Picture 1 (tube, rainbow, N blue to C red):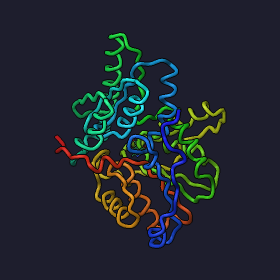
Picture 2 (picture 1 turned 45 degrees about the horizontal axis):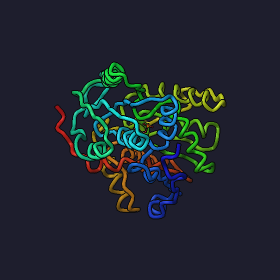
Picture 3 (picture 1 turned 90 degrees about the vertical axis):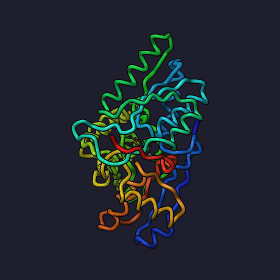
Picture 4 (picture 1 turned 180 degrees about the vertical axis):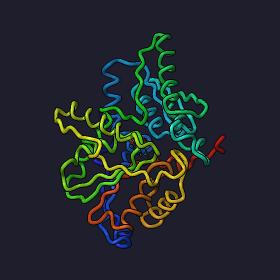
Length: 318
Ligand SMILES: Cc1ncc(COP(=O)(O)O)c(C=O)c1O
């Protein structure tokens, strides 16, 4: 199913390349041309096609209240006459790490766009991610009890199909990179790219936007899924994934000083806008890794979008 204008542009960042002394390029998945852009459009081309084939009436998902995935899923559902519901929390977190301190992004931004696309947003009090998943399942059961055919789509579109979409995306930029750097959260962007570049000269570095260490388990599970879908058994192991957690800041959905500074750097040097939850933090990681000499040569930053969150309004963290 075609939702995006692909391939997205990929171009050199001349000013920053000169300033940093590397060859810095950017893959513009902020410019997919679908529902405000972002990495979810590619995943949805597969996920929504699969859902339509199985004859559903409604897709249900979950995420933070400022989820970019909810926005893009809502748009894909709208254009294909599906209903869309999402269980959301302002600040979902992992109980093992506790609720982070800080002002979480909540209102405005994506919430305004969700409304345009007709998404039913159901907000729940902040809590553990597992509680949020359970709320999505309960919403799905509620609509099934009313006679609808309902499918639950995992958070961030991180199903094996979503990851497969990113294994395909790597084909658009090909070989010849020393490193590809992307934000990573629910994992399918990173898993797909890492799968595509396994055992090549290209290192794929996922900069995490969440504190949880167990993302490595999800990356492994998603790459196993790509093995099945593609028929190419790469059998990736957890240590195949380079994933870095130094730039999360206070926590998921809470902007960090380093991330905000990185947004300003890219905006003022190249006129390109990142976001405060994912791509800004990942770009902060890239700048630090270049500064420390960890990243050299020909480096590609995968811009995953998220610009609507620049217009999100924070809510004091209760
Ligand atoms: C703008 C943006 N960048 C990056 C990510 C992370 O991608 P993934 O969920 O595939 O790890 C997301 C979604 O979670 C996102 O909305």
